[in-house]
Image (tube, helix red, strand yellow):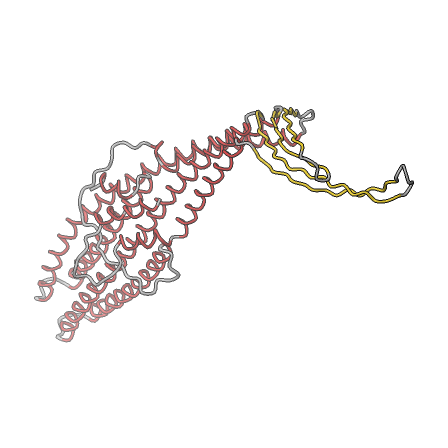
Length: 431
């Protein structure tokens, strides 16, 4: 189960461009390895699958004969009177026996067969649920890692913007002190600087929260000492798979196996209406007062038939039938939900990619305009209001581009989860 989690790092490598100059931090692969070893959901899913396999083995054991060994030694003390002397006394007898009994069920309404099939279906459902949990944890891992990397990038951007706002404030103060700018412009520049400083503090707090979430998924108690490294994906078109086999999705396969198990549960209850036929054999020896052992062998067939099928068994049958209908309905619902999720996730990836392409042009234009406007404002060729509008447009586009890159990475991870194919396979489908 954990192999897919370990391999899923390949997808994120395609999303993040790592720089060797960055301070040492945990890469996505590092986080995946720690999550694979310590995530409680993965351990719980593995334990559930092991339990289902054990239950299947138990059900298969019903087809084997039961063998029991019995041994006894009894003492019998009786009052006796001699016919010759008429004297009464005590007589002690020792009886010893040793035997083996073998019993085999020949027919019980196919209940044993239905139980075995039910256990096999439950084992299959648990296995697919384990795979489903694996992808869900991988998705949560990817989401938390992306949000943490976004937190790093957001802090860096806010620091750059704070430096820019401070530089702009100095320029406005110089013009104000020289009598070439009004006080309102200076106050507005001070407010913009204070707002950016607040947004930097907000970004630092948000990153701490995301790192704490990431630490929880990795199985840590807290985020002390946890740092991540990486960068968000840049712009680029995406190519998504044309076809999707919903029947192969782990959630669908788990629901299908659960429906099969519910059907066999009905057969188990129905088997209680049929007679039960079993064969038994006994082989043993017995001895009285230490005399020679006598062999004893018995073979027989027994048939038992319920004469009064009480209401409780009929109620069990109705309940089992209702569970079967519910499981079948749940399967249809899961299939519909998965198809809707895939369609929605595909559109989200396409929208996020298109948004980055649009923002790339807008950001490039904003940077050129901001450079020109700053020079013009320094020379007094444009008003503060016009220059401030261009600056705000640049800063807005910088923030939107960073958020767009984050959203594209998150959309790809969400699509991986919706497809149920794992992050590694999505890397091949979406370069």
